[in-house]
Amino acid sequence: MATFVSAAAVVARLRDAGFESYLAGGCVRDRLLGRPAADYDVATAALPAQVTALFPRTVEVGAAFGVVRVVTDDGEYEVATFRTEGPYLDGRHPSSVEFAGPREDAQRRDFTINGLFLDPAADAVLDFVGGRADLTARVVRAIGDPARRFEEDRLRMLRALRLAAELDFAIEAGTFEAVRRHAGDIGAVSAERVRDELVRMLTGPDPGRALSLLRDTGLLAAVLPEIAAEIGVPQPAEFHPEGDVFEHTRLAVAALRAPSPALAMAALLHDAGKPGTLEYAPDRIRFSRHDERGVQIAEAVMARLRFPRRDIDRATALVGRHMVFKDLPQMREAKRRRLFADEMFPDLLELHRADCAASHGDLMLYDWARAEAARIAESPPAPAPLATGHDVLARGVPPGPRVGAILEAVEDARLEGRIRTREEALALIDRLAGEGGGTEPAPGRGDR
Image (cartoon, rainbow, N blue to C red; front, top):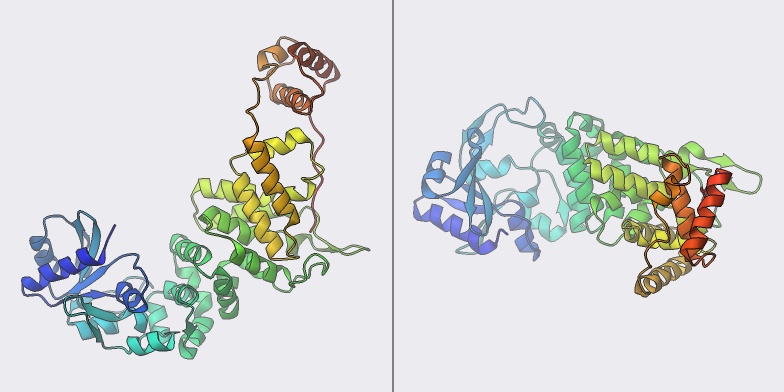
């Protein structure tokens, strides 16, 4: 893991060789704020070839842009030559690079709070862009003309919002207005880069504020139109005193505790099916089968953003099952035990807690489910099954889903105490095979 001490040693090695060098960017910002840094970058007067000559292990990740990665025993450090840049013709990469000094290098960076340099030996900060004042004022401000900074790399619009939410900073008015004016241009950014910024927002310290900023700047409609569609969609006040569907979603995401990307996306998308299923029934507003519609939307959104298949599968499964808790107290014992034993249950339970916390605030069902799951987990392990698939096949049932359904019905009967012996299990298989049965009725559908 990269450390300040090792990063300072990289700077010292470059300085000893006669090259002006500093720690640069976010690691300086975080040190001044008293926060741990995720990584450490170095800016230097040394050219890439000179950097590689000084360190035994290096990787050229962007030598044309003056960037070399120095590998040490405890981490990797990106070392970049001071530079100025030509126009960004593709909205991400400069058309040309000229090596320069620290002042010019600071001017090309994105935000003032990321444009600071630190001499670790002297603990001295170089500030050519007013970054220290903005750190004190707790402001995210683009360096120079905000529109130009965003034209250079449109992802910086999302990054501005993410930094503001992560650091609990305001966004400077001119920078905010530039994001609002150019929000529609975010489509030029690759799906993967957008995804990574969104995940950092949703798993960061204040995802609720991040969603508010996305909405207020227009980036929500540009990046997640399915979530923007929730704005203004009413909900039954007796279940959702917090307001519309978007406000509920915002609060639910904010209520999660240390979520994985898949769980964060499930919370974001768990009610995405509501706008398309809204109906004004005689008794109240309803969203019949919104969970099923939500699965389709979650699949489409996450595929569009190029999430790994494992995250898509987990998030869509959580969205599809997030209403299961409303039937839990009436659920048959066997089915409830299977739910508690499911490896996805902890995420389902956390999603349910966040869902409740973001609406009526009643956590009685959550507390009961948590206690019941703990009780069952501490009970003696279940005995071996009373019957197997061979027993079902031996009674003339052809291979296929019906075999599993019959075995599940037999196991349900055992767990519920209706059968206790192998002979009783075989008799039940005989009856189910003869009746063509073995499947359970479909669970009730939720509409809240």
